[in-house]
Image 1 (tube, rainbow, N blue to C red):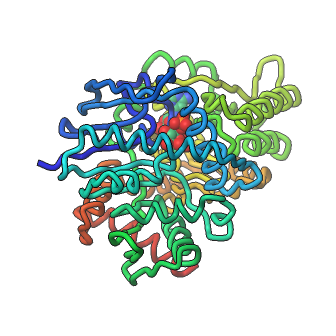
Image 2: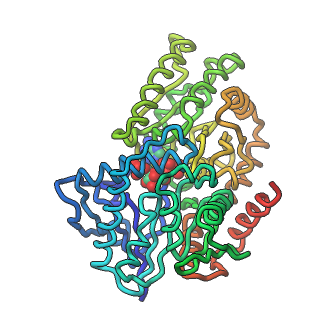
Image 3: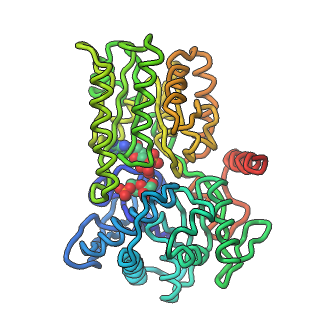
Length: 477
Ligand code: ADP
Ligand code: F6P
């Protein structure tokens, strides 16, 4: 029987080793079966790359590879997170490029291909995740693997004018076309990818979106990633009555909780968000003493300078906002930079009156979907969401804002805090239905069908409906 072999940089190991807060681990954790192999980095940095360890976790076999410190630095810190990440998040000003980092990136992709070839069977389906492994299909084809290979990009894709800034852009674009299927979060990302393929590579693309280059035909489309909604809802309902959520509620003393949960990443728009909250307290003084903002932002990618810079900026801003607005009995902004168990966060989402999710650009943003899933149907909170998060294409009933405008954030917060119950319920109900239908399992099934080349994807018609709606909205724009 064909096995599914998932490849990603982080692997879930029961919440340990290579796992860190992040959308990818969240999405994949919910789609594992005993027949699945999940291959990735072990989380260990040592003298040499290549040592493999095998274990079982979350119902799948995990095969994890150590990386040499030098390889890890050039591959992950350098090319993946100082070149590709800023570029694909529309931040060319933060991009730095070094040829030796790119060589390190190719080295690790080749090491991964060698390791994969040691256990792959010819009929395995390989499903590769994220910008760390764009060249992996090409590496596997060079080693004569002929089975189906799919790729899913969890982050955005930029238009040709931006993509062409990338020195090895042509090579990477051509490498993407060596996959049988390339999946994106939104129709916008797909449009940008196809435009790059046509303008930069001059490959032709059929009406159905099949790319005809020098390799096998490559299908590209948008399949938005989801969460295990029912499980998350149930977890939130239970966690609400556990000690931490109770303590959080008690500490609010009846004040409305505004909650932000993000990795501490410059793409998440945290400085603008904090400023927007400060603006709320200035423009709408009636909320002073009646709200509290809790931002949970676990430190991320500390090896990368730009992440340390944003952390410093946030530390200062928190001091400024609290210095300006706090009173002897009220701290307006609480800020935590460590990981928390997912169940505890689920309980916090349920306690919150407002979920504040304001990335400057984001592939999907699963936190937005988790906030919706966690709400109490009888008294749901309001989601304030950036129009530049992938989730905005599906969650049109959130209060959509431009995250670059702190005044707009303040106005949306005011609208959310004063929204009548009936409107909160109506908005929440429509969003919950979508988050429920476009679940992690609908997403993975649709992706795997697409990798297999099945045009008529075996997913619930309702999920297809939302993608079509997004597609039609894209045509109208
Ligand atoms: P990204 O992949 O860019 O980090 P997403 O919003 O798509 O963004 O996914 C983030 C995931 O990480 C969510 O599942 C969220 O619950 C989890 N997460 C975020 N903050 C924390 C935290 N402090 N502790 C544990 N998990 C977190
Ligand atoms: O969702 C984007 C992503 O880069 C994932 O691939 C990753 O697991 C997550 O963010 C967290 O980032 P990192 O693995 O660099 O800590």
